[in-house]
Length: 214
Length: 179
Image (tube, rainbow over all chains, first blue to last red; front, side, top):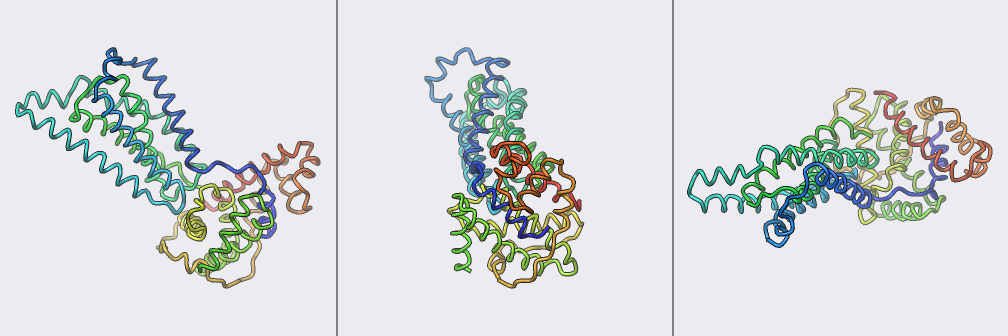
């Protein structure tokens, strides 16, 4: 086929319905992903029983702010990496700063206590075994949907774009998970929440490497 | 370079607003650039150049929503071309390094003759009958989408959707063609 013929065909689509730009598509992913996670939290894990009191205290919101900001970092990175000429730098910087702040707060909380046993108790909380895996599980629907949407966009660095999508998903669903999880120390959150989000990022990187070619 | 960018960007913006003539001109200009860009980097494989030009134009068209109009159109199109070239080499198991920032040279205007792309025709042959006939009607006979749709017994809206699906399928098949 001659290239001019191809161009004629493509030009005939100029008036066609255009696909939405990345921000809008990613917003839909977040909305549906958060809804899936919320259904799982309410139907499977159930909301924490002291939710009514918890929302009055600061720690519930600090936790939500931490995971929400991680999700924002992932969004900033993936919104750029979904384009062929995009760099995720701004997202990585935000993510690293947010994590560093939480880790410092966690270390401070832990070190104020000189008692080693108290430190370990804080580190393990009530749910250290289940926290990270649950965040990964809750995030899989959003990650899967997100990778499918990314396939329709134009990422040129598939593993990085997949990682960013994992970070975005992890941040969003960990925020929803806060409705169930009663943990209330920075020490616990900096370690186990971050690990769950990071693991989801790695799943995304691996899946992205395999599936994001166009 | 800035002149060329200004012109391409203006055409592309009008194209995105539904101006088919401007869009055609933009793609044609881009095609010339792509031919030069790939030609200089694929010496010894002239038959592949036009295939890659066509595959890249298809990608530019299908992925145009990922261009952020606040940014340079040249840089975006160059990134698409670079990705397609690297992907082509990867499929052929050729290792090369490509600089990230040679988009100025991307605009250099030497104009080798366009050849004929074989892969696109081959990919077209593998499409389901209805899609292939629709593409052929729009391409060869220059029918409008409404007319081509009428010939296939579907509405203009349905013809639009079918053509878009056909283009997506073509892009996917070309990508896998020399895998």
